[in-house]
Image 1 (cartoon, rainbow, N blue to C red):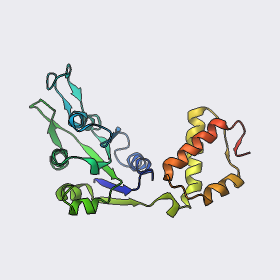
Image 2 (tube, helix red, strand yellow):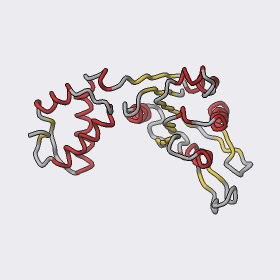
Image 3 (cartoon, rainbow, N blue to C red):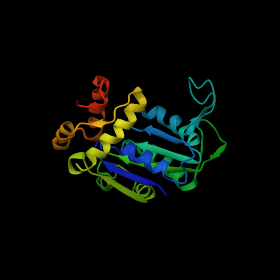
Image 4 (cartoon, rainbow, N blue to C red):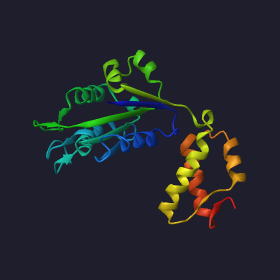
Length: 217
């Protein structure tokens, strides 16, 4: 079933999408991410669905799109609220029929993909304002998840600190065991306006600076 995650920028929607994938029946399949807001409109269709050689100027080879790459896995569509009406219509068809044609192609490509979509917009409102298709919203919103800002779930800070210690220990080849209680207390009282993304950046910087067994010692 499709999942729709709503939350402010930096609240960890991508982490949640990844966790859903790796704890699902599709966990052995690929987890493919696309930021719909980061790709120009004229390139997004090719990015999602691929293209055939000669489809447009510069299409010198066939290209596999993200939907095909995510076959038997999960496609995470971030910032879904930024899609144009035309792209919304094309996405709706794939969600409903599980098939599409590449840009410039006539052959139908069938895919088995779970879609996890995310947005930092109040999507119910943009549906009411006719900026987002109601039928597509209902198709994506099978399992809705609303992620509050980090300041409203401060109990998660210590869990996220542990997660980032594990992540950056592996990434940087350091054996940092934990964060000192004094620094953790500061973290627990800070409002984190940049949400999980800000916390991750602070943790990464702390790791770069740390040469001890404990962060903050």
